[in-house]
Image (cartoon, rainbow, N blue to C red; front, top):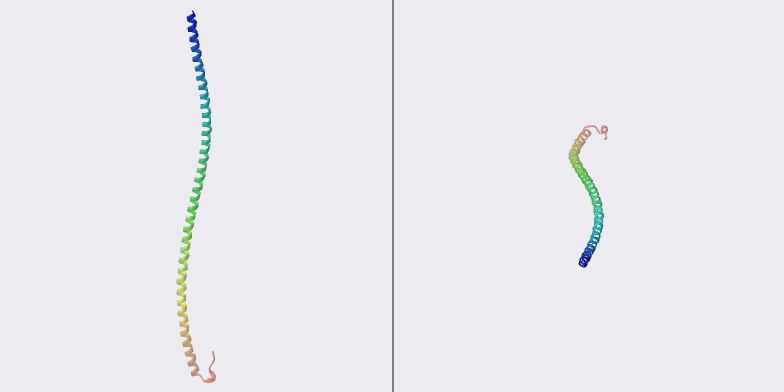
Length: 143
């Protein structure tokens, strides 16, 4: 019986030692679990922050996209207006060219008219000179 008590004490001591080791291991696991839980919580917060940032970036991208589209529309409108302006200028240039041709033609016609008037004046002066020469001196009229 003494032996059995000694064996029982040894077994109890080992069981106690094993339970102590198990308790320490369990405590370490609890600490590890708490650490993992804390890290997961931090990771969850970081993930939420990333999600919020991603949503904000998407909103910014949408806004930039809208502004780029609007800028493109403005550029297209400006190009259209520039083409219309160019066409208007081309039409105005053509109108001025035609007017210039008409003015040149009018100038030529006026120059011819002045030459004809000069010729008519010369003829009238000759006629007046002949009429004076054929009339008696007191009957000549002055013009």
